[in-house]
Image (tube, rainbow, N blue to C red; front, side, top):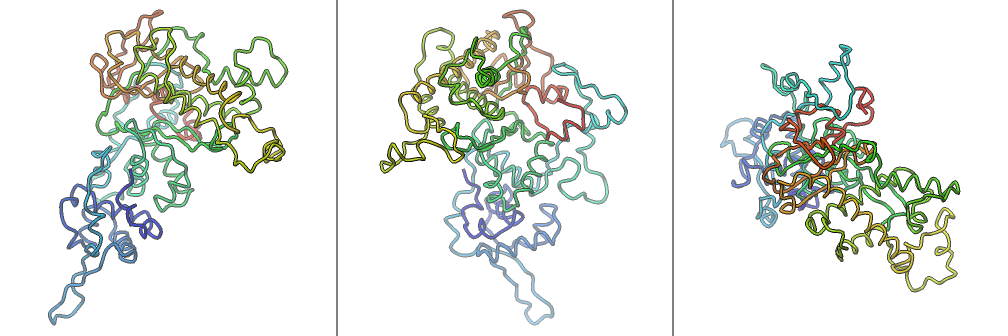
Length: 495
């Protein structure tokens, strides 16, 4: 789903972030979307959005130069001075203005492009104060709640002089624009896959500015998880862009969140990616005894850096989410489940399209990659080794789905099969000790937020926290509910 300013090619090619934000406000903001474009002035827009008039004036001038708005000067009828300056839509823009509703995340997008003052507690601010007092406690997977009074106070504007948007936990116009671009491309759970260069192009910001503002969105709790993208010949596309899990529950809950903490703390310490990474490392050393990984997967992943295995695990979570949403009841049995859609999905992710017919067996590109390394059979089309490897990946996704079913199915009073389920990646160094899922719609007996503690094997109890914000910050990070830039985690003494 594109935002409305993207319908104007001249705006995307020539206008900066402030002009794009202002145009979106005028087209689809709740205060304007039912009214004609006329009598818009710098003063009225600046007052409405609580922005500096010079910022609004510059943005409107950009939109005039882009041919989207026209500047109108009222006649003075013989009086001295310049007439009142207003702005109106240029003729010919009617098709772009016909539809002014968002098909998804509409409520949150409309608030982003409104005069509403959006303020959020800055994650870690209370820990920073506690650390300075020498009272920081870095324990993990506890149920201690953070003191939130100071955070709440930080979100309240000071009386007197108006504070510029963006300070003290407020969402500035440019951060609103970036978050809106991410939202517009995310699915119903808030998951979006997009690279920084594309975000820079869409927002009109420089890539480094985008990175800084992404970190800001993390600090405000609006980005739950970030899975960094990377380039690797392991994947068919050659590059996988970064994935962001947005907090679509920031204002109003959209579904339910469930966390499961295992009783088998030692037995669940590794993910599938951990096992794969360990087996590949041993295989490189020639230690082949006791390997669990099939030979075809070893050949695909051997020699790859650890970050490739982390991304591989994320893809397995995507596949397992698909299985949990469509085959919850079938997963409870040991019978094979055939899902042609998932198999095709895996093949698209890992099998490169066959090379053109002009390429021959002696074509050097078929023998070696650009760096001289052998090219995986998965790159040359389906069948043979490629088919075996994709079957192994399918089986791994099935194992993960059954693990999640067994764990959350312990809450047998909840009808998980009635919801779409998305796995939210928890902190990777915890393995499967803690697992988290998002459910839509919310399910009876579960609540909007639930932490299921396995008090003994197969028996769970629901924790006392009714809202994720009641958890200690380390818990939120562990459960995948929040992220902080690495430098901030280090400064706060968090893992």
